[in-house]
Image (cartoon, rainbow, N blue to C red):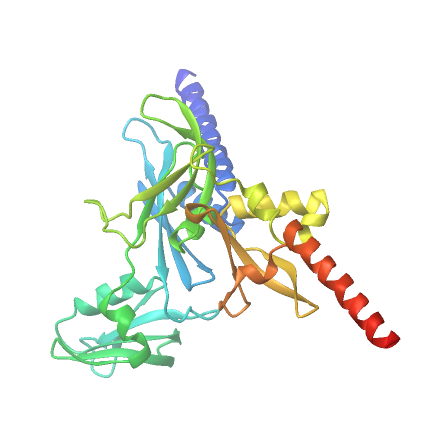
Length: 339
């Protein structure tokens, strides 16, 4: 009887743990499909496992690895970290994978390893000591060669793939605690170089504070091979998003609901589309917050920079000067007509 009760209690604990993990992943913004995969792995009873996902960002494909590990004291699983890496090369198309191909011991047959992460595929390819090929495609019969080696020596790297091959993207570790921390979308925005606003930061002494956070992608990595984080404290640093937005003629700022949505997107590190006016015509541009310089950056749909100054509201002084000039012009024209 006691054994049955213990078994029932353990079953309930496992279900509670699973529900907690699902809630944490949802809060952290992971896809529903990834949550389903987590549930499958937990039910399979694996002591630890990694879930993988890919997202097409503004600057390339972002690869995510989400780590789960079972406690040493119970059957509960924990999600304490995930990592993101930016592959600025060509993103995988639907159904594609990276393929590492080498001859098998059976004549006429090949070994094929499939990877969705380009850095992992490159690492596996470079470990080979004989003949091997690195390719991308749906399968070995439908592939495009990226690199090859003969007798352990690399003899070909596709031109556009060369930079990624020489410097594979390194992951940035994101630590989380029971669903709290940077979300997956925020981490993607960070690795693409954008700033994220956090209201729930704590000092080492436990004091709460607010700040814009941005990875120092131009600086050296730390001893754990992670980028350092720059922080722009709010309000002491002086970046006021509302005031900066008010400097621009952006259509979405005209209604409170659209304005609130835009501010939320920018604080999340997103690059949302907004409507401005250029040469008298409405124009869609993508905008991102730049707290370091108390500014906004604007881009075309192709990623080309747009000069933000052309979308500034006309200062009141300039408006008065413009009105005065307009009046003078009108007077001048009237005088001309009268002569």
